[in-house]
Image (cartoon, rainbow, N blue to C red):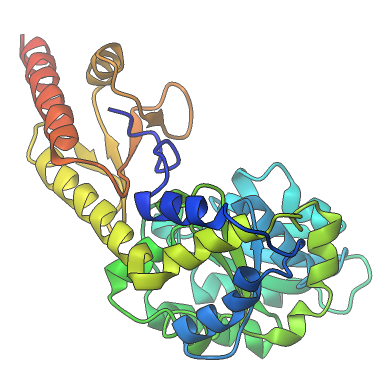
Length: 352
């Protein structure tokens, strides 16, 4: 009954089977094995264009290292104020860029908009030695609010960024969930829309510990291999990361897992919003739900052993509920039944 995150569950059986199979025989180290070398072809086929792919173990490493080749130490990286790179990566983007400044933008439902972005760049003081200089734009797909950017929205942001010669980075920790919702091709929502570099997430959607940095603008990858090594993410037994990504992409496991997680969230949201005093905070577009509940309902659910995060702070009555690739209907039913019971109790106390 743990709805804290899609990180709380284990790995997909298909990925575990691939790891077991990979454990036999020998392989060259540091990414020179056949599986690692194959990834460029596999991902080029997936994205319908020639790409360069670099496996790493964490999303933080993927984001921070990607941004490190996009910004100078005196650069400004534009992102949403709730973005993972701003709130949840302990200064890693600033560290690996050598000191670049994150310039945060507001925006409803976790999304930056083109007007705010264009205005911020216009106010940057380009060419003034006292100011950080615009260097890159980063957006999250899906967002920290569980929403998605449409193809048109990504293209509009890319147009603003590229008009100032700024590369566009996409944090795709839940990229699969976004693609499943949008029902588009991976190419359409990335390089065709103007994305230069993608942090391709897998861990939240069934991998054990595997992410990838995908370069559509391959010129930006010139120094990446050195930066990955320096950061400690060039694994000697890289084949164990690469085989996870291979199993994840092959046979569309990534879409299958994401589609299931999204559907479970949709089912949960539909049932919760039929109950009194439960209010959605954002549209439910992937596998994350943000709802407001009465305080006593939250207390009772936690006491029953349900696990989830209060959002914003420990006293907040906004909670985040996350479903995963292996969430079952019975888990949804149990939570909904408990919320229904406690909402009824809370309502009767309020009326009384």
